[in-house]
Length: 150
Image (cartoon, helix red, strand yellow):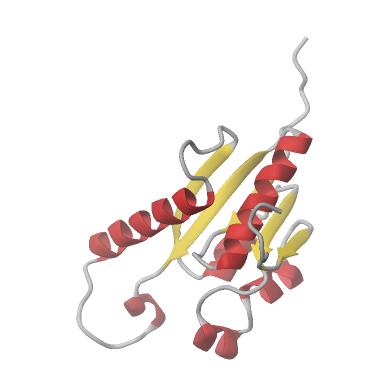
């Protein structure tokens, strides 16, 4: 008899920082324990989307670069074969907003304590802080680990 229980969904922000790698590892281990899936979310945006001035940037090129970085990040965390419970999502926009939106209906939102983007963090507040305040589900904030095996 099949269970009608929904599969727990864990949303994880991936930004290339050591703490986001630790968050992704943590979420994958937790998902295995609870029989859930991990939605790894990599958020990118073009400088023009934020109102910066500068040379015109081809959005298709930016998306391709983001896709390549996301692939590199996942390969760094999961060398070899990726876990079957991993779902990959590349999203354009503001990282906090994208993760908060993705938290709708999730069991947990997992983020790293310190990511990239010190200037934006100083101006807008950290992504982890904003997510902890506004997510639609509980938030786990994972710090960088000295030994990635733990």
